[in-house]
Image (cartoon, rainbow, N blue to C red; front, side, top):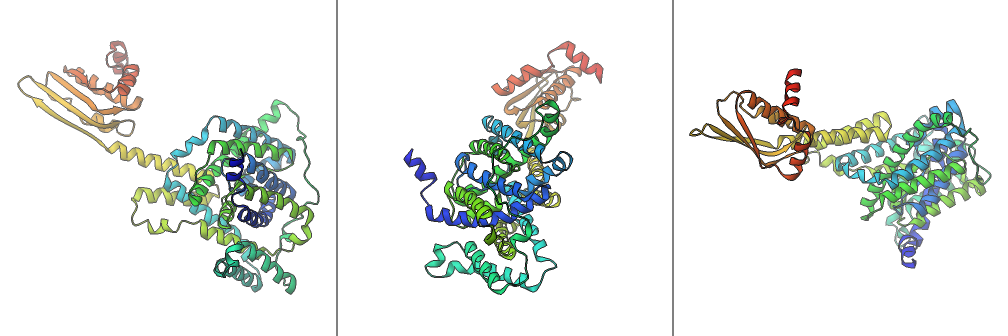
Amino acid sequence: MIRSLKQDWFFNIRGDILSGLVVALALIPEAIAFSIIAGVDPKVGLYASFSMAVIIAFAGGRPGMISAATAAMALLMVTLVREHGLEYLLAATLLTGVLQVIAGYLRLADLMRFVSRSVVTGFVNALAILIFMAQLPELTNVTWHVYAMTAAGLGIIYLFPYVPTIGKLLPSPLVCILVLTAVYLVTGMEIRTVGDMGELPDTLPVFLWPDVPLNLETLTIIFPYAVMLTVVGLLESMMTATIVDDLTDTTSDKNRECKGQGLANFGTGLLGGMAGCAMIGQSVINIKSGGRGRLSTLVAGVVLLIMVVFLSDWVSQIPMAALVAVMIMVSIGTFSWTSIRDLKKHPMSTNLVMLVTVGVTVSTHNLAIGVFVGVLLAAMNFANKVGNILYIGSEDDPHVSHRTYRVVGQVFFASSERFGRAFDFKETVEKVTIDLSRAHFWDITAVQALDMTVIKFRREGTQVELIGLNDASATIVDRYAIHDDPKAVEKLMGGE
């Protein structure tokens, strides 16, 4: 028990505390912005970010990962809030938590193994682009002071680590925020600050139950939104966990992460917060700032609440230019620059999957749609490649009017047409042997192709013998094939 606590919580105390401070500062404007997107009060997003981070620190399966209110989740809530109000959003958040816990127990996170590396790369690149695009409103139609502050912030972030001794002790994003805030307070220049984003809450969150009728009508209203929130939340969380695994060269329990996300959302709904999920941008900030353990996530959530409730006068003075500089650093660090170089080396199909994932995600601003399209395209490419690995050769014995076909490869929906075209049904032979010892039949389409092959030969008066089926193929053929059932064959041929 003590060893586990040390491994998860106290092996990197200084790094986790400092990185948690950076993340807490960066979470504030994003939580406010996402609340505005969803059409709710800023405190709804801030309370969500606090509760998500604190609960997931204990319940999550990926140490060092940050969960809070996110843009992807906020976009799904707009219609629900507009048509039914905040209370129904809180009810949907509770139901989302329940569905995510169920998904964890059903081990649905194991489906992540079907997401190819090219899809993950496309997802990461798209997210980096979206993070950068989200900063553009803060950099358009502004005075030169904003550009100067942003450039200075980037200079601090990238150059401070080279300062002897102290450069290794403090995370440069935190130094950037502190220095630029001090410059703003001293000069009093006219630039946007966190306080301009919205009013910060002045009270701690309290437990509450959504004021909605507990009936079937309410369930009918919130269930579709809860399902969408569940899918998008888990997808983004699983992708984030995969990225953090790569950044830290460690592994994580993704099914536990599903349950943790569910518990966090359920707790968030009881505290008056909106549904959330893992945040790739903030998680990357945490890792780049030295955070590795659960303590960093806990510190981020607790410090966030302390700052917005008790130190709001100071927090509201943080210039947005400082946070823009941090987020630009995140977008640069998140983007997989090697993927551009690899375009020349990787197969065209792999590049296409990556580029389509990026294009769809950026154009729709929906990470779930981008990943779904990428996975679908990758699956089609894989099926096409495997379907082409099919060889059917033949040899005849003219002394006994007999031909033997030898099938090598995988027979399924993508290769069944090639399988059917490989046989000469008009050849005059008394017997045909189809050797399937080096073939595998995967699905009903493959069995139907075998049925039609046998039936066509028999219709020409040729005797057909199948040999060499492996156990798995024999099982599916014996169960679904009809070529030895005269009634079924007659019905099939009559239907033609």
